[in-house]
Image (tube, rainbow over the protein chains, first blue to last red):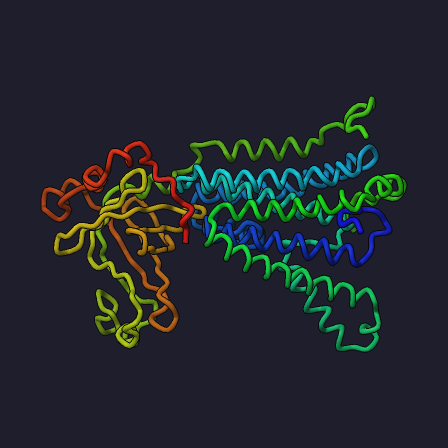
Length: 250
Length: 199
């Protein structure tokens, strides 16, 4: 079972595992970011609200910082999708691996710099938070593209909305029998649960090990890549999906 | 498997150029004032007010513990009353109380410059939200906890460090304290890069 398989024959189990594992990493990074920098790494909704607030207050420095953070998240998602779609024909496995490799490198860089060099200046804080937002954009873009838009691991506002709707639908017999609704409900519960578990783990590890905890998040993503390589079906997946890749999220 | 074939690479999308250009312009230094620079200098505390008071007409709002705080004696809250704070470069902070006693601390800005952290020694760590920072006024919010008073609001006004020193209000500057406490080993690493202990 290849988690990053982007072909049409992608199964529900793959979405559960991919969603759960990457949501745990997202929760982990977000909580570590809040503890270390007092800024969220994946809460784009919150940053947009903050941007509006800073615009009203006329705080030029803060407007610039939040705008760059938002653009970095967008850039991450942009690069992930660009990598997957432009390399889909020639080397789809590299197209899917590159965003995660970039994210692993960035998280390792934050762990290294934070552990050895970070002097807690505001400039460093702003850049490091920006790097973390870039990684979350890369991850979300990569996972959403690979899962054809089914899995989004940092988009908890939308997820909570969907969850409420699906729980409501479960009250009606005609929807309870709908496999699609049941799958989405399970997937969203898995993502939400994994996000919380990842967040708790991140908080505990950061308080114990400081910035080295970001390396653990990178290792978690590395495990996903290693898993797919070890499973060894990537080559077969490449051949099959050249004819059936859906480049754009549903 | 080859990453690159003989086919020409895809044209770089114009939107990517726009995004990169926007990032470059926005990330360029010198755009807007840096809150760290705005904070440097001397500030006199002029008020400490609770978010919730039982009777607005009573003098509870200024320099008072309030009824609820006295009801929770186990809460070891940090109090700053009528102090003079001198923020120096490189994160040094001198806090002079109304009696003239002086303590040294370390200050940092976090987030987008909206969170002020103050560390005194290894155990005492305070976190404030900066609600207002202008040339003449600084307003901090400190979350005391709902059971006590909710949020405490600390107000400061810009003061002259020279006047404070001459009048004896500030007996030493933070720089003096740092120099006095600095050992030869510290001198080599005065940037104080120990964030691993962020709590």
